[in-house]
Image (cartoon, rainbow, N blue to C red):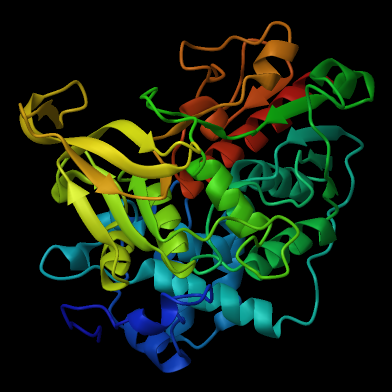
Amino acid sequence: MPDMSPVKNAMPAQAPDVRSRNFNEVALGYTPELAAAEAQRCLNCKHMPCVAGCPVGIQIPRFIEKIRQNDLEGAYAVLAASSSLPAVCGRVCPQENQCEKLCVRGIKGEPVGIGRLERFVADHHNQTARTKPAPAAPNGHKVAVVGSGPSGLTCAGDLARMGYAVTVFEALHMPGGVLVYGIPEFRLPKAIVAGEIEGLQAMGVTVETNAVIGKTLSVDELFADGFEAVYIATGAGLPRFMNIPGENLKGVYSANEFLTRVNLMKAYRPDSDTPIQHPARVAVVGGGNVAMDAARCAKRLGAEVTVVYRRSMAEMPARREEVEHAGEEGIAFKVLCNPTAIVGDEHKNVTGITCVEMELGEPDASGRRRPVEKPDSAFTLAADCVIMAIGTSPNPLIRTTTAGLETDKRGCIVADDEGRTSRPGVFAGGDAVSGAATVILAMGAGKKAAKAIDEYIQNNK
């Protein structure tokens, strides 16, 4: 009989006063006993509504049933059949808005902890597996994947399973894309990402780093080198700013730069070759997951941190878990406030950020109530560092160097639901098409594109 407890088994975690001073992973993972208990909460529904909420189509009840049978390798096989990055997804996917949102147990209580169970199974496999996955029989065809983030890696993995010779081109010196430069170590340890990539390489995927497509090689040159299709998965790494006075002062960062320095270049370490400012007071502008990541990193650098967001806490788009963790770690929230200027001293160092108070008016096109400025409400928040986390857009390099590639007014590549672009043989997906979104949605796009690429090549042999 299922366990009808209305609440999930709690995830063990570092205490807030401890974790706010280190970059070690906050969530410690389920023990075998906790995983077994949580698996018992699944009703094993015949119509499996949770599967419909998973962008990569994991057969969720099947892998949970394997946990109940204490067949953890069987559970991993179910995960791996649909996901190239289960240890990553178990940590950073917003399950509460996807698979768990549709879980029947969530009607009268909390849904099954699907993400926690996925992480447990993937971690167990990675810690105990004695063999690497073997390459599939080669089919004689070559595909290039541009970008080694979640979308590119997923597409590469699915194509490798079909026998394609896949080369992934990464602009940075380390593969992983946003998984390594954007998401902090305390949410996603980089060893986890490296392990997932090693698994793909064991399947035959080649990864070339320091390869900036559009500079070191063009898309046309990839085709000239014998690649029969190209999948563009370059993400959305171009930061946005508010274009307010003072954004050029010393101590103003985009969240991209700040997080890349901290996560990829380990700038928080005393022996770092690229050290970062250790500010005393930080204002983070924005309310999404990136803003939470930047704020929590700044806290670990020893700063007093305030998140400035123009809407209310209820409308903050970041995951509830991340907002709660930030609050537990002592990060302050200044909501219904909008920056109007960044102020500095005679040496052009940041000294504060001027804001106005807001109130919520009528809904805008997104359905959220539009913030409206309150008159005579300006104030200045003391800060020696300001981090702008208000969104990103795709880097223009690919679209400006690739003929015949249609883009929209946001700079995103135009592609259909299977990733086909306006240029034959060129496919695209993830944030390069949708704009900044989630890891799992990018992975879903990579899966669809892999299938479409296979159909394209087989039909043009």
